[in-house]
Image 1 (tube, rainbow, N blue to C red):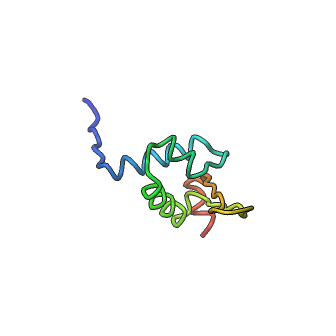
Image 2 (spheres, rainbow, N blue to C red; image 1 turned 45 degrees about the vertical axis):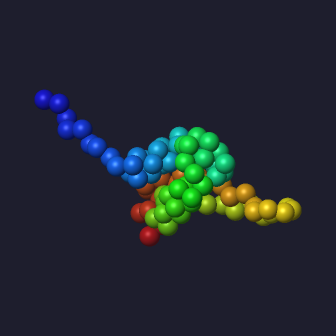
Length: 88
């Protein structure tokens, strides 16, 4: 008997893809530019997904101090599912 196939909507697919890319890069940190290139997602989509992952404790965000004009670089690193329990 074949296992049931799980069908994900577009949003779930995008979130799963971003999670997979961040996980695979761990322990290395990735910038928005790197994530946009690897996932094909826009900055707006990445901002929404990554902010949610940071809020639930799965991803860490690190902002580098700026050294000139423009926004400082921010990096994202996978913390993992265990980080939720240990952070409580």
